[in-house]
Amino acid sequence: MSDALTTTAAASVSDGVATGTTDPAGAGRDLDVILDIADLSVAYATGSGDLVAVKDVNLQVRRGEILGIAGESGSGKTTMAATLLRLLKKPGRVSGGTAQFFPGSAPEGVDLLAITGNRLRRLRWSSLSYLPQGSMNSLNPVARIERQFADVILEHAPKRKAELPTLIPRLLQQVGLDPSVARSYPHELSGGMRQRVLMAIAISLEPDLIVADEPTTALDVTVQRVILQTLADLSRDSGVTIILISHDMGVHAQLADRVAVMLDGAVVEVGEVRQVFHQPQHEYTRRLIESIPKLAGAAVGVNAGHPVATGEDDR
Amino acid sequence: MTEPADAKAVRAAETAVAAEAPDGAGASIRAEHLVQRFGSGRGAVLAVDDVSFELDREPARIVSLVGQSGSGKSTIARQVLGLQRPTSGAVTYGGKDVLRLNRKQRSEFRRNVQPVFQDPYAIFNPFYRVDRVFWTAVRKLTDLPNKRAADEAIRDSLRAVKLQPESVLGRYPHQLSGGQRQRIMLARIHLLRPQFVIADEPTSMLDAQTRRGFLDILQDFRVRYGITTLFITHDLSSVHYLGGDIMVINKGRIVEQGAVAEVMAAPSHDYTRLLLASVPAPDPDQRWTERIDIGQIR
Image 1 (cartoon, chains in turn purple, blue):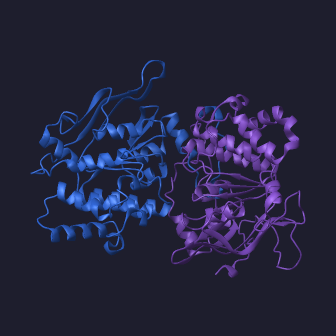
Image 2 (cartoon, rainbow over the protein chains, first blue to last red):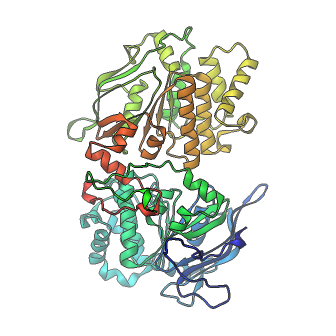
Image 3 (spheres, each protein chain N blue to C red):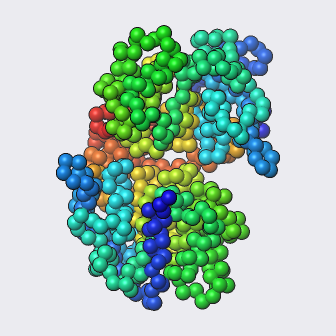
């Protein structure tokens, strides 16, 4: 099924937003690609044989883009993220494929699935970073926020120790937090503030790629909007590439440049966001979009009388 | 390990003996000036601040109570179910304070007002097959004549919520998906045919498709069996999909209420507008153009 997929599915975009050019396999590496996932399969060993969670995924992530990965729970999207971050736990294992990563620090490329030890450690946070689920308690409850920044920065970039006193406040401001938050403990912050702290940690070493796994799940809708807004700002201002995993199609519609749809471990469709929403190629994508209850005519701006966006009739 | 509070609530509903007669038909639930204060002194939190509303049976309605975490909506659910004594004010069922019902009235209340909670996993005992959820309900709350009739009723209820009896009966809770577990709670409702369902964030752990199926069943229960639902949620899309009435709660106070279609088309309160503007429209041509000021919210 997946061999029918061209990873650069920009071919037929109706509204004139042409993106990228096709790079047939073997025609030399496309400099535009920061991560090239090829034939990736991941399986979980169970008592009654292997359960394949990710099936022959081929996907190219372009430098600077926000690539949304959509799909319901059980579709394999979180397993894929964990695999790329090398956080896959037993009994899961990579049963095939490669993930060539081309960060600024290693333009010749490294296979994320093969590197180990010090090379992996150097890559983490400084080139490849992670923004965990909004609902997860990813901060150390007994350490002040500044300690948690220092832990990450000193572990992965010890030379920057002298910068810490200026770096931490700057990072906090970048995600819309007051620098005084550095002195707080996690329990003193709201869920939205904690998620913004995690975002600031994720960008602290100026990574090339951030994998964000359901970053707004379990957050209130207004907080979600602010987090998404901040994520979009980061992408625009720093050019960082973001893989955004979410089951919420609304999140992809708002943020993603391209969207890949996963079903039963396989990527069944990938394309420019407008194409995926307006001309879904796969039946499953169509159902996924149709299943969203729409607030038709309810998109009312914060300031009365100013609609957030135009209606449907302009397409 | 202590038993999860939600499990206690369902158990409480079941410790009541089956009422002899389904009297109380037409009974409504009224929340009258509910106040809930937690803690005291400077650390006191006013979780519910003078909330009043009425849930009628005729015609059966779906009334959504919408607000963010910490807005007080779950506390209201617990007050309505008689699980939380309000600091002041009262919840009445058929005109009587739900905390002062006599034995017969209480069993009637517990049979006719059924809870559904956010995490269906928490109310199952992990060591028993899911069948037990039904058999306990059958024994305590219904008057089915024999095991054979009860078994048939259970299977009917499972089919009514689009579950195949063979694929869930005999299984343990962990062997079922979140969507299946939540449907089992709906099958239980189908079996008991209460007058009211108090559903506290029942869909927040479900996928979009599963969620829609769940909402369709609530709607079906309203139309077919005249069940009125208090649907507590932070998800405005679900509220829009369900229709009926909406109450918007912010910091313990109901700031706006009315028919869903009207409130959503022309929200009159700033907070309602903010909520509506924060729902990500599933259309790349309707991206947010204005920014929400971070100072507005935490």
